[in-house]
Figure 1: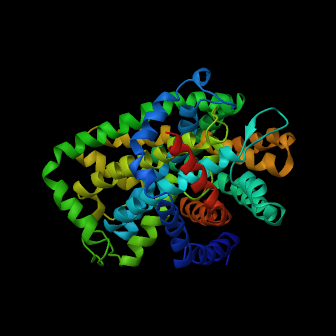
Figure 2: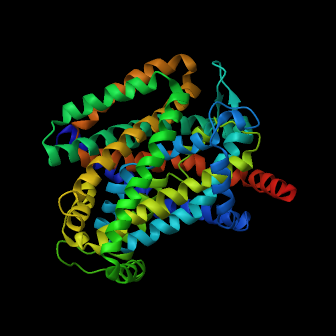
Length: 451
């Protein structure tokens, strides 16, 4: 047995443990408990969150300390979440779990709004100022400052997994997906794709979080709206198929689906497992990544930034992932036997012959590029927490080098590693959210009592 096969076997076994029933209960249970404790506020106040998001577009109009505008903080976090998870991840969930997996992605997102809200509230409430004068926060800081020295090891654990996970979920897997789709669509060599992405990322990274946030603030709204509009056009052309699509989704969320066409069939457990796993992969609620970006926002209210943060989960999964999933189902492409970005591309191309596939190709490329930028923030902050600000430059160099390597690597192995690291960084964060939930409830109650 060669080294890669041995590593694949070991990580597969670990993946089965960390993504087992206990993990799914922990993710959904934490979100559900927070939603109950907040009395449904994330859903009831979604409109308020969108209003605060629109009001937070300029740094100079905001009250409080911080480095980036509240709007750009969300765009920076969305730049990291709107990526291959929305295109390849949704397709993989449906391929492995059937149409019912989309239902469980929705459930993960609804309770995930409460999780994302709590993460951002704690990140701003317990943030610090680093040696460069920048605001820093996230799970490692709210564990250290909120839970005390006894739990300091938990914050360190998160930072280690966060730094490692970044090279998987936020770097190599993104470069690999772009290289794969450009190679199959245009015959572009993966090394060339990886090298071009590396150069573009390096040009943005030089400016740090402020430049990344500014780039995200321009690119993310454009690419999200463009992708959604293309999806709506396709759904409009297949309007008669939409009721049947929803029936498939709701029925097979609770009953097994038999093999049909190129689809191999799936049990209910597969729909739940891959729906939740890919839902978390897409919106990252519970992973603890997004609050690292929100901690840098210019604000004097943890709760206000929290309401902005929770809209990100809604936009990412309820809106964008649903578009991808519904297009795959109404077009009938989910029975083709294809998976990943190829399945999404096939669905768009069959619905819009001649250019539908290009929408996915360019959408995926742009989504992946901004994800690499967004995750560079997360990895950088985790590394600087562990080793200080002096480690930022070596980290950026390693980050850039990893891009072309990822573009040429084995896709299935990268997905497996990214999926496993996702779960491992979520565990310390979810524990902290449960232990610090009374702080979240107290701050929320006080804020809305004043309103």
